Image (cartoon, helix red, strand yellow):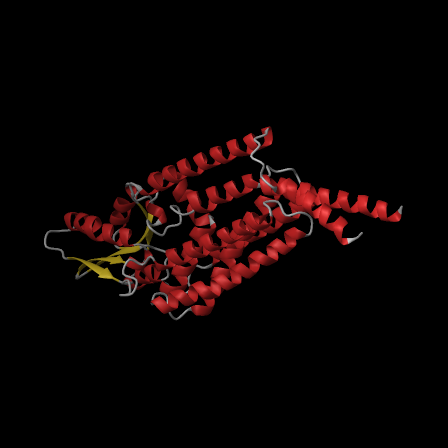
Length: 369
């Protein structure tokens, strides 16, 4: 096959990709899908963010109580608190310190102490101070002092205690965008073994982003002193998001990308427990939040930095589970290869590949003749 034949085959392939301005049925279908997907994403954003965050309310907020049984029963009766009775002040303090309770009440001879931990959620600690403390004062004998004791004050460089959430959000968005950029550059549905190269590419993105984003957080100020565990958690969170995204794209094409953004961004962001602690969220957001990657990542980072590394089992299991499911999706896409909805670049590449192959075969036959 001489150079002119090769050039002819290439020109033929490029002519397929060139947009001649024609609108066929496939183009109309893809356009309609894009419009519907944009509407779903837009409506999903407003429903999830407004519905999940507009009216925080206590729903079984874990509370450690060292005091009379009657007080524990009173606090648990309204459904606002999930009360755990403890035997001593030290036990109540320990449960707040290790993040197994978001607050505590200790009744002693010198009065009543309300234990709060702002780094676990400023909304909760403020409500315990402004609402619970006056109620306890009204229930106690006249003249009983009620004090608010801040066990876990927020550091000056993170006064709202939101840096763990923002780190988790940045890791999740960065890795999701990396997976989408690969789809834009090389097609939504990687073919054959190329899906493994896609996984290798997003793995590199996950590692580099983890190293760089935690370094940026260090440079700005918050979350210092835990670089290695934060990087490891960021890698796990990033890969759990990107592997799922690649698997969904490989299985379902552009529909997989839409599902990923619905789960990870639209539902995962408001339910993560960052802006509003999970026990204050309504319905579905309170239920699924801790079991989505961003919620698990936020809990992991917060517990590492502010709670001495306690209660890491659940967030680690959640992120590992999402990572495993992503790998299974990729394996399923390689073996089953169902026809997900493809976009224009996928069709163009397929047609161009066939054109090159056809042109090469014709040139070889002419040369053989």
